Every structure is written in structure tokens, then in C-alpha cells.
Length: 271
Image (cartoon, rainbow, N blue to C red; front, side):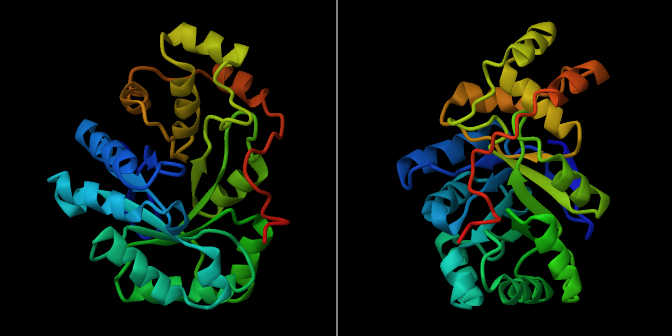
């Protein structure tokens, strides 16, 4: 599994399993366990997904050494608003049945995020998390952290896909040594790009799927991808990206697909 190095030296696998909208219980458990069996080593969950317990159970029953699995979870908004970040982390850790997490994120830049971010720094200093970062933060939020003399995040998890390329924010993060993680890399159900004619043409050229083309387009730029699937076949395909390299022309053609079609909520107005 290829990795990208965070600025503190921790390595994060470029391909992870996103668990958003996987139902708690058997669906999440089976999907995570199957993913680990086929070679995934990066699992992304969150308090609001309500499936941390199932993720933790699958990790425990996988038989893999804990240090081989990169686990991410996130602090939800009520804990940020109510200044209960430390308790939120303890609760997540208990649900996951882990002694630490590899990456802990603030889920949204809502009121109270500066205080919550200080909790992340404290947890990191106490070695309860190996790295920390944010999700859905815009440039102004990242600059605000800097203004308050807070350590820059190691990761920003944001929406990036061919129809919503988010270039300004991606460029800002990469220039400032903040690793970008892409959620909804395939566009989601609202603006799926899987049947796009340009992507289909490129996929045919390399004899791969359109999802593989999109994931390669992102990982070639050292952007971590978090695709979600319940299909074993799709999960396997998402890992199989080593047999082709997109040309400059391919990348240029994909760049031309940007429509600013955003699937997720807008951090500018999110409350």
C-alpha cells in the first residue's frame, strides 16, 4: 500500500475505506473486515456515522497487528459547540476499543472550533493520537488557526472529484504541507461522474474502470482517497491502481471536467 508522509513523519495510506452511510452493525462490520482481508490498511469513520463500534469490532477480529491499520475518526459538532472535545475523544476511543487513533479530525469549522483544535493539540502532546487535522476547512479557517498561533493541521479532509476539483483549496493545502484527503472522490450519488464520456474514454484506453481512473487522478497528485463501497468487486478495483499511469493529456482532459458541482454541504454556511 503506497503512503504519503505527514509533516510529522507519520505515513498515511493513499487509499482508505470511507465508512460514511455504511449502516452500524453487520454491514459496516463485514465491509471493514473484508476490506482489511483484501489489503486495505486505512479506515475512516466518525462519531456522526454511528458505526465506530462496528469498525472497532472488525479491526479487532481481523487478526492484524494494530500498528498496521491506520484509523481515523472525527469530533462531531455538538462536542465542538459544547466544548466537550476531550470527552468526545474518550467516547470514540471506547467505542472503537482502541488505545489510540492514528488521525483525529474536527468534522466542521463551526463555532468553538478554535477551542476544539486546542484539544487536538493536547491529545497529540499526550500521544493519544498520532496525528491531527480538520475536515471541511476553507482557506480562511486555516489562516485563522495560524493567526491564533495554533499548529497547522496535518490533514484537511475535503470534497474533491472531477466535477468539483476545489483547486484553490487543494493548492493552498499542498503548498503549506497539509495533506489533502478527498471524500466523495467519485462525485457521490448527486453528481456521479462514473458515466462521464471523457472518463469512459480514458478508462477504455487503459482497460480499467472509470472509478479507477478517478482514484488514479487523485493519488497521482498525492491526494488521499476515501471511496466507499459495499461491493467486494468495487473494493478490490479501488486498490488496483498500480498497473497504469495517467498521461499529462489525460490529466488535462480531466481538469477540463470541472463544473463546480458540490455534493456536500458548504462550509461557508454550515451550522
